[in-house]
Amino acid sequence: MADTAVVIVAAGKGERAGGGVPKQYRDIAGRPLLAWTLAPFLQHGRIGAVQLVIDPAQSELFEAATRGMDLPAPVAGGSDRQGSVLAGLEALVPLSPANVMIHDAARPFVTSSLIDRLLAALDGGASGAIPALAMTDTVKRCRDGTILETLDRNELARAQTPQTFRYADILAAHRAAAGKALTDDAAVAEAAGLKVAAVAGEEGNVKITSAEDVLAAQARLGAREMRVGSGFDVHAFCPGDHVMLCGIAIPHDAGLAGDSDADVGLHVLVDAMLGALCEGDLGRHFPPGDPTWKGRASADLVSVAVDLMDRRGARLVHADLTIICERPRLARHQPAMREKVAELLGITPGRVNVKVTSTDGLGFAGRGEGIAGMAAVTLEVPCV
Image (cartoon, rainbow, N blue to C red; front, side, top):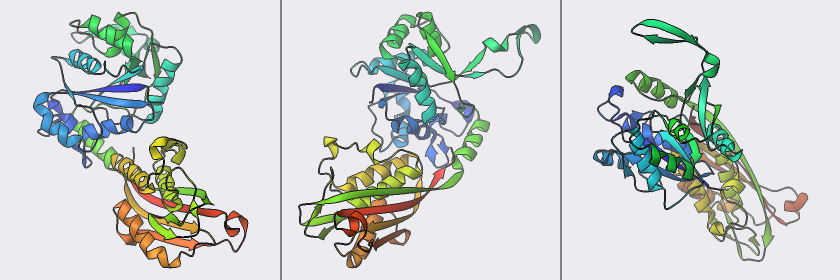
């Protein structure tokens, strides 16, 4: 259920990070920083819209950084961060989401688990929630280089973003606080008398501010790891004159039952890709009975998975598919199936393998009741 919108403030100049462009548009491990920041929100199931707030003078940089992303038109920022946040909130009025997250464009390391914790706090009755980190060092209050007192660190915390609120509440609070120069959105909420919860923040959720931060982010986002995902699926035979396997129509005296074209080969491929990305399974992304996918070619499912992989900065290294059935006979179709899978994935056929086998008359496949498939894929993904 997509009940939450996100406002991302990206209107700053970000000059301290160097590089000749505002920091939100700096290249970090092959992608603009803003693209890394957007990715976890665009991939989360409860996020329905992401509203960017930018400096109109940076429109060309914004367009280049977000090319291919499904985003509403950005809105112009205000004279300060508080004004920019209000502009983003006002832009969401036609959507009237239940919740809204407010986030800094220069924090690219938000995790789905952090998003889940923040929304769980709202689901539990809080008007707002922020990620907070405990103070581990002794904290002093100083003036002009002299210590005035030692503060109780047990009552202090470091605030992060995204800060999350009931949309109607924080919109009203920001409207009331216009011109008051409060330091963050939680302060705006507090001034309006709203109950704001503190959930566990994450040390890795750092804000990119200096040139040293950029170098650290380059090292972190540029690091890669290999992951393997597996997939499995089964479809029963139904009346028809062909089956779709790996994107190829193969003549047969029956079809395969399913919401889409029931292509077992492509279904297991997508399932394996989602597994390697730790993004759930087919049912999460393509719910059974969803009319959106009724009768659609399974190649469209592959496109969704490839797009998700691209947004995560992942690269598919290898795909190995196994089709299990007694009939139809598939050996002569293997080269075409392999070529089609490679085409859909945008890789060379030398990175794809398609195997066919039977169960020697055993089980549902052996009885000719349907076709099963298995897949394994190897992805190279950023270490985040």
